[in-house]
Image 1 (cartoon, rainbow, N blue to C red):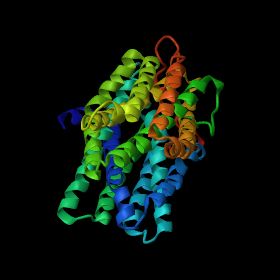
Image 2: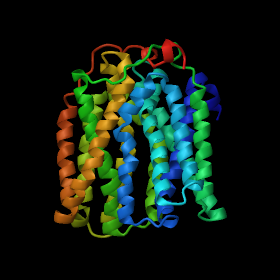
Image 3: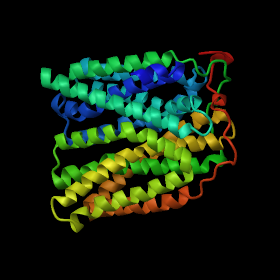
Image 4: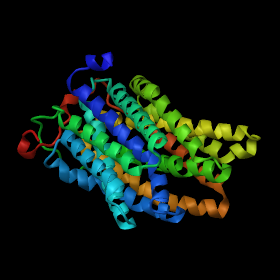
Length: 408
């Protein structure tokens, strides 16, 4: 707490906003599947179909962000995102008696979630010193993981005291989102900067777009099929999955700032290339652990792969620091990140259909062999990364849009 007091101004507010947003995210992540099953009786098929509207905001986010950039700077967009996040959670807890409204409020919550994905990187860059971008984004990632632990802990405590009261869970999540929005709203960075572009596509950013697509593949392998190996093939219970999630989040509090330093030290080319090789190793573990090791060692190795892959998600900030270093115009950063998220989700929304068919037709090993082959290809893509020599331009130069050129 003393160290937090020593941090001044906008960085302290961003840390607190990120922590409270992490807490809201922890509440929804640890309760949504149980809520859908217990309260609304969703089966596996209905839960799978819900992913389509849930991911839809990520697919259209470049258009949403482009519209908002005409009037709001990133800090106000982050505050608006927390409004959507809080309304979505409160709607699930109190205003969703049937499936139709569940879908509506899941989309509202997801919209806030995806707007934050587009603006949190540029906000962190504005508060970073040249050459220290990775460290700053890593610190924010650590704060988010700490918030996630707080949110999951709050759910666990309320469940012990009051039972599975989803209205209370989502009230806590809504309050956390409101607090995050308040701290984002109070940010002063970006005043007086010119408006950003509506949409940006440049040939100079082609590697950033390719890396975004690779991340979409990685995300689905981990979130859908990695967990499905544990649950469907090894019968791992919900409590154990939650414990793995908690362990990964706890490690992230410490390791995310350190991994940010690694990005600054080694550079995006080496870090992202190494990440693809580690993903290849994770895919091979998921594919062949059961064939190579006896029980229970195969499951222990799978647990390790699950936690490792979760922690390595921190390296996604290298995409943002890389874009900042190659940006032709600092005003390109936020709209280009939003386009990257759309590319990411284009892959993320289509890959599960193909991979599910391969799983059912040929077995789970072929899903992870395909993902491993893509990771190997991604390794060679990342080796093509080059950044300009010399110090990066001052982060404060990264523009945020203002209505009429003035503060939002």
